[in-house]
Image 1 (cartoon, rainbow, N blue to C red):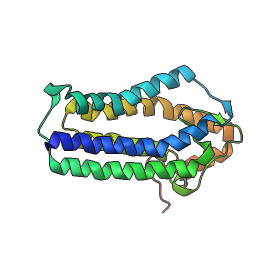
Image 2: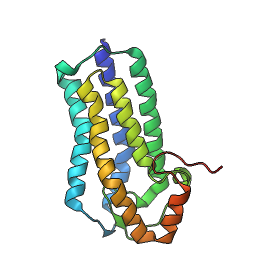
Image 3: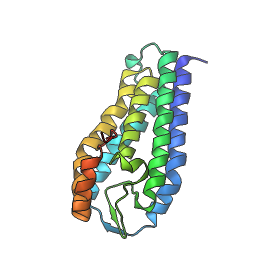
Image 4: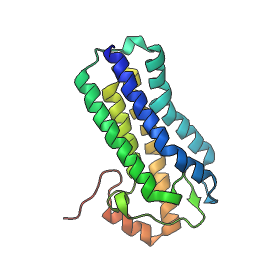
Length: 196
């Protein structure tokens, strides 16, 4: 088995893990009443861009070898490091879903009876799910020996993150006011903040 095939299998296993974690939460989210959902069209565009970078482009490389011109020699050490980063990403991803419970949604939405989650992994980080996706994108760059497919996740998810995170924080300030403002002073956005 070639190292490129191993890289594709490792990346594919991570994507399957992501889907297994997300699926039950996505089903539940569809049944939850939404109070407010700003910018639906923009949200759809951002999700398509992120999905393209984290799934479509790398899937094209894994299945078709495209784009061949961007290939470089695979490294077992980089693949192994990427697998570890992806495993950490999935662990954090599962934890964020568990801690958010009924408050999670795939797009920017305020749920009916939405509450501000500040415990569990959210005690130190406001957006740990975004941190999990950054780790996925980094893992993809390490695992896939193709410049385009490897870096597509950083570009695709990065676009979603940089456009969405400020909008999400404004929405949370509007919903939770001073409670959310106080929360921002004791937490990091995607990197944990520890008190001295």
